[in-house]
Length: 424
Image 1 (cartoon, rainbow, N blue to C red):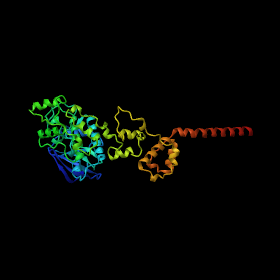
Image 2: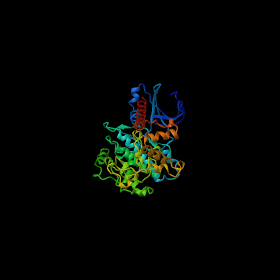
Image 3: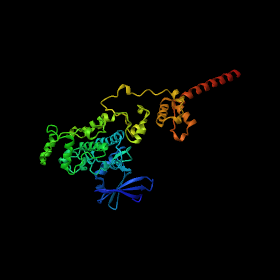
Image 4: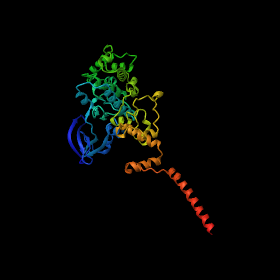
């Protein structure tokens, strides 16, 4: 730990405390989590769920674990630093979020969660405090201390997540729940983003179920038979409530937002959507994702994502501005227009300085794709320092240049030979 300087404490939890630190080597700000229990071997450390999951999860919306250090039997997690969590972001608001901001926050949460589930884990503790932010523009899922593998076998503990975001099957003490409990929690968080108040702020497990019933109405037995079995096992009697219109409780939410929340907040976990990003709520033509993803998309260059290089595609899959389900091909009128011919780009009257940055990137990519490589090389030598561009060797062009030269040289040789014969 002598490579890090501790600046101040950020928080204290059940399992550890978190401090703000700085790397003495790079000067980068980091979050240092010190576990409260002691660890006497590396094997013990590596078996921690938080280490197991974060080692395998590398995504723009999942907090990055940089280093694990065991020193004097104390365990430290070094991760990237984020300014605040989503709860703090909501608490400090004096006005409601615009729906565009909520949509982008939800897109990032669901994008990170889909990645976690795809790689075989579910979080079990989704709540605003575990969503770290750099303002509303960037959100990352953190704190994998309760994470479990989807393929792991029940029974699981019934005490997971904060009560207000706990799924009804967990409130009814099911031990065989799975990843849909994360979807329920995300539905609760989405409602809270619109109102800046928790949707089901129960004072106990039973009170939380009552509050859920007051909003969603009492579930029917044929809609969720397993829920009635769980309630019977713990001698719980369902309150008789009629459902409230969620639009009345959240008047600033659009119909598409209400539709998504209602599906995330289904009583039956089997009915909660596994692919919430397919919903029309996200299909509004808004640039969605982290600031870097939006920058990579190049908002002005609609439909030009195909211009990315293969290396960029391997590092990070581009996000469409209007996410469309894979099973539904995009409408024909959404195809990108053909790129302008090269001579039009060269003779454009608008100066390069006046063009948006994204359009300049598009222009450069089109030039690289349409111009022969030997022209590109010549331009790089004339107008741009070579150290900033890759060196291009075009063997095809060398042959085209060499063959005429060889032909002329042969002609000259035979002329000289004929002259010498004449003189002789």
